Image (cartoon, rainbow, N blue to C red; front, side):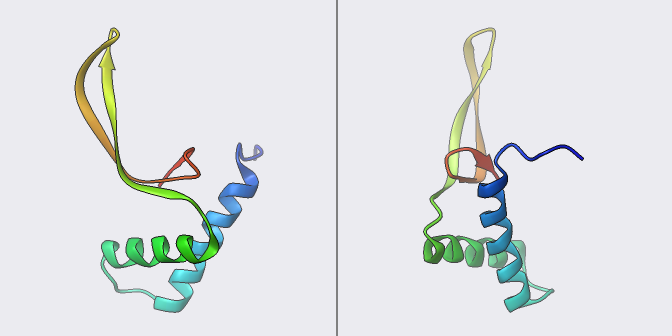
Length: 78
């Protein structure tokens, strides 16, 4: 298996995700987990942006907008 590009950053993200799952357990809606993970990010000082929009370009021209749920450290899309 290859080395992760942002190994230290993804370790911090995974720590928050596992912490939330261990605390809440199974059976919640995706949105509940997402809210809890973002709360953990805030408590752990992990910068994130929610529902960030990016232009979809075709041959250099914008044809649409795309949205990601959560972007962490301005590098990693969840």
